[in-house]
Length: 277
Image (tube, rainbow, N blue to C red; front, top):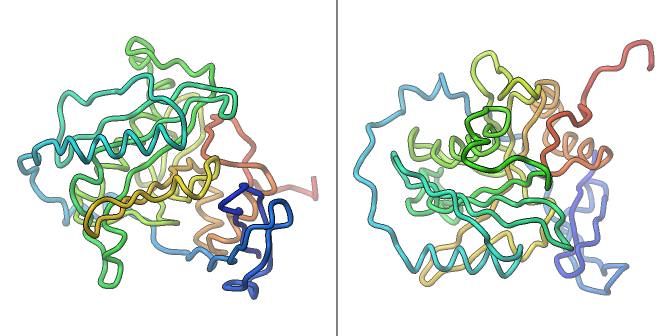
């Protein structure tokens, strides 16, 4: 088991033992002072059927905060690149979720999708976690992924967008919250998101394709927006997280080079091997 983290200045990736949490060091690549973060917790699984008794009726949406939306758009473009399209939500409940699309570019040769609207309302966080009330989500798609409205009529193309919307609306719909290492299964028992993949769950992780500076946006007052990545999982990966802890799963992701860049047929990092094969 290990802690895996990156230098916030040059993005160099490091893997250290758990007892190094909190230690200070110097990045071997750029010389920047770094602090080894605490390991990620196991945390909870947000089981939608179990949350049904916490579901509350939809309330009128808050008016669009233009300054809030502009700040998010500027933050995205500063760290990820120009936004070429916004998937505007026509019918909304609880919060109005739009998805910003950043096209493939030289330093990020894939699509990046980032939500806005999830942070228009605070999540219902536990005592002591008030600084984590505001969140937006992101994931990445291969440059060949079909992304027109006509393409979205096929669930094999649309499921990552649906996943972002479901996850972004979930905390407001069920009076709960999404934080690092929270996982959400797709039904009970979990079923595949679409016919072209066996992914059936998702976990919230720090963005693994961005620099640390993208991960938070501080607005006027005491509001900080945290940007998290949604990473689809196989059932065996969810089971690994629950049995062995999130750090073990992150370690497996690192060895298999798994990030929030979705490959519907990527290797299962926790697949059981038979007869040592």
